[in-house]
Every structure is written in structure tokens, then in C-alpha cells.
Image 1: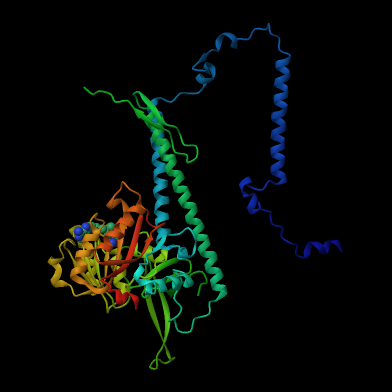
Image 2: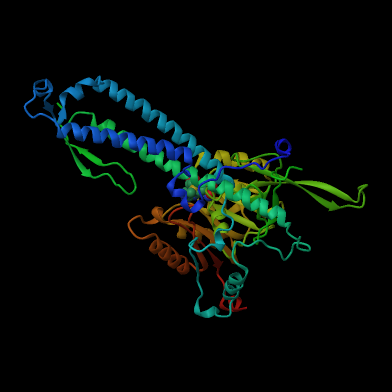
Length: 246
Length: 254
Ligand SMILES: C[S@@+](CC[C@H](N)C(=O)[O-])C[C@H]1O[C@@H](n2cnc3c(N)ncnc32)[C@H](O)[C@@H]1O
């Protein structure tokens, strides 16, 4: 009976997420997102078509008021520029100042969190990964058979940084469940740490950019001595010409 | 017990050093003064069961407290995590520590050598020395010495012969300072561990070259460097060198 179907529990359908390896493409697009995007695209397409037609059918002899009222000033149409209420220099500087304060506050919050995380996440497996610290072992001619040479090969077998197990009374069997949970928890925290470090760096660069922008509002002749670094995002560097003070 | 909050503390390859595993992934030492932190570091306490006839259940529950040893603040911790082969300090050792600053690392070395060992901590700045002295009040195995490490004669009366000299004075003539102290206080065949900050010694040449030059200086002073390790990613352009002092050829081939 069809009415019984409503009573029996149905499966919960979860929304599919973007697969890990396509993560760079952003969120996974769903039908409803596609519809919005397609509608917007067609609206723009129609508008462009309409404007093209209008331009094609334009009468070149017709008079428009814009022909005499609009002009250009510093490569911008004046009528457009005038429409935006202008901020004074001081107002603009003030806004920049507030923004910079906010960013710098956020950055110090981030730095404090990084410090806290770093104080308890020590990469204890560091010695086992390649590209870690560089170890140099000095062996001189008079000790080919020496303890250190032995120690070195011993170490190589034992892996540096490894836990000592030999004088722990019967090596406790590791609980695989605990081990798995520990790993997943640690991975989460290390990921958080990496994310915060990246964010802190971004905020730092943003702050530098804002500072440069603010400096550029000041008077005086200056020259760009270094372009903005597109790769690292570091702002351009300017040098102001010395002005003699009286 | 909550699953997520459980932390396991296991002994590290180096005696007296431990690793806490759980949500943290941290190096630590057993706190000599349970219940107190020295510089705001985190403490981890675990309960262990010890067999005991007198207890009704046959086991006695004991609480052990560890202090997290931050490698970003201590070069010895950074070297241990980097996988240094030998630190020479172990429970019961006597250590002369040059350049103790406020005693953050000294407190961990004191935990490491335990109540049977001793740390003689030399620091010449009175300002840092104050914190050091305060820390030492709670740890009977720390002997603070507020003197210049360049003049070991001034504290000669306070020191016995030691097993290990550690130095982190960040001075260009560090090798000489260590050698001078070793002549007075280091046992024959004793060990040294020094931390080298490349920029403190010569900022105009490659760090690797600075380290090599320092190792050469040490060799000229009857030291026998065994191993050098750089401290990335905890410190940039830093290295720790360990080795022995006045090893006779015979002793070294045994
Ligand atoms: C890099 S800090 C040591 C930090 C400390 N080892 C730690 O890990 O917590 C160097 C210290 O050595 C001290 N120092 C420098 N030259 C010294 C000297 N000649 N005698 C004693 N202490 C010295 C400085 O005052 C400074 O506090």
C-alpha cells in the first residue's frame, strides 16, 4: 500500500561535496547554482545584444546633450567622477588608519594563537622526515672503531628521535584505536596551525600594503624603487626625496 | 574517561626526556615542583599505577606531572627533536650552564638531571638573573651564579667538577669562554654542548662556514666535536655542537 511507504524510514540524502582533488575549483556547483548563473549570463548576453543593435542603428547626425556636457579629466569621464561624493584627503587617511588598526589587531590575535599552538605541537616526528635539520657527524682518523662511529650506525638503525623502548618494562602494546584517534587529532591541530600561519602572513602583507598606501598620500616627491612583488604580494617600495628643512 | 582528552606520556630515547602524545605532540620533562609552571608553559599530569603491598588493592595510584618543553624557546629541546645522537645529560649529571638567561631552559635541564643531579647556571645580566634566582629557590638542584662566564675564577669556589658544560652565551668568543671554563670544571672525558648563533659570531659569511670555523676553534682547544646539528625549523641559522673534552687516543678507541 502506498500510504505505508510514508511511514517506513527513508534514507537521508546528504549533499555531495566537491571532491578533494577538485577543491581548487571552489564549492561544487549544484543545479540551483547553475540556474542562477545561467540566468545571469543570459541576461547579460541579451543586454549586450540590445546595446549592439542600438549602436548599429544609431543615427550619426542626432544631437545628444552628453556631447557638450561631458568631457574628460585625467582620463576619466567627468560626469561619472562627479557623481561619486568625494572623500577629502583627511577622511580617506582616517579610514585607512582605522582599517590598518583593525588588521593589525587581527594579526596580533592570530600571532598569539600561533604561539599557543606552537608551544604544544613540537613535530616530534621531525627527525624521521627528510629535509629536516642537518646532522653532521665528525669522525676523525684515530677512531674508526670508536664509539661514535658505532653510535652513528646504531642511530641510523634506530632512527633518531625515536622513543626509547628498551628499558621500558615489557613494551606496552599500542592500542590501535588510541593511536588512530591520536593521529587524527594531531593532524587536525597541525592543519589549524598551518592555516593560521598562512593567514598571519597574509595579514602582515596586507598591513604593509596599507602602510604604503597611507604613505603615498603624504606630500613630497618620491620614486618607486621596487615594484610590487606579484608572487609574494609584497607592496611596492617608494623612496621620498629628501627635503631640506629650514 | 573522555576519549579525546587522553594523553600518553612516553620516555624518549634520551633519559629524563619524555614525549606527550594525545592531542598534543610535545616534548616534556618531569616536573620537579609539581603544580607550578616556570614561564607559563603547559603542564600535563598523568596517573600511573604502581604495585604496592601496603595498599588495599595491591596498587598505588600515583600522579606524575610533566612540563611541556618548548623547542621554539630552548635550543636543547630543538636539538633533541632534530634527532641529535647524544645529549650527555642524564639523571644524576652535574651540568654547568653558561648563559642561563631567565632560566627557562635551565628549569628543564634541572628536571632532566633530577634531584640527584645539579645545574650550575651562570648568567651575567642582573635583570635576567632575578628570574633565574627565583626559579632556583624552588629547585634545590639549581645553583644560580650571577657572574661573567669569562671569569670562572670568580665562581671557582662554588663548583665541583662537572660532567657536562652547556653554553648558550651568544658571544663571538664563545669557544674561548667554554674552553676556559672547561679547564677549570670539566672532567676529563666530560662532554660539552654549545649552541651557535651564526649572526652573533659573524654575520658577513655563510652560517655553515661560521659553524665550521667554530668547530675548528673547539678542536684547537682540546675539544673533540662529535656531532653538529642545525636547529631548523625552530631557529634559523643556529647550530648545536656536542662532543667530548680531553679524550686520550686510548680512551676514544675503546
Ligand atoms: C641566548 S640567551 C640564553 C637563553 C637560554 N639559554 C635559554 O635557552 O633559555 C644568552 C644569555 O647569555 C648571557 N650572557 C652573554 N654573555 C655572557 C657572559 N659572558 N657570561 C654570562 N652570561 C652571558 C646573556 O645575558 C643572555 O641572557
